[in-house]
Length: 196
Image (cartoon, one colour):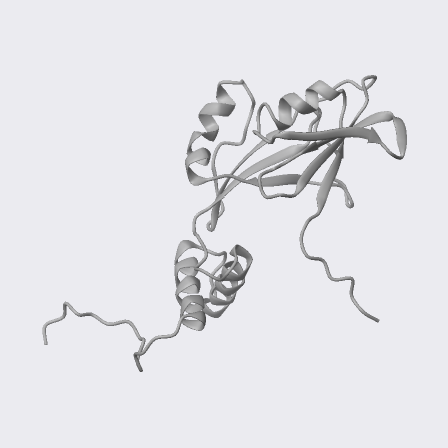
């Protein structure tokens, strides 16, 4: 038995209402360029809209002009999508409350997640959307996921409840030591300001 090894998210497809609601939300609120459209090849009555979320992947939406937006929260039973999270820069995140408020979009306010900051709100069809901004940049050659895995290990070693910024900083130090050589025999922390 062998795995079917994934290499990233290819795309996520959502069931939308009318075409313009999708364009107005995905491009007009979240800034995702509307990159192409074609018929839904499995259902001729629907259109298939494609949006670029910023990482070269795709968010796609099946639309049908006979469907109307319904802002009630989408189901969260087992097997359902709870929410979609999108990465934003720290600069954009600091403006999120103001930009949502100017559209009168109800939101959660800023949520401290220890390793990132989040804000939640619903799209016009009731799907919960999260905007997330990491509190760290991974060192060269490493990914966010690898930093989080190392921070998780540190959290467990220390018996801490959740990942905090100290775990992130220490994880980045550990990972940097693993992939960047030094001529020094001793790379332990030093205090060059201590009186000798």
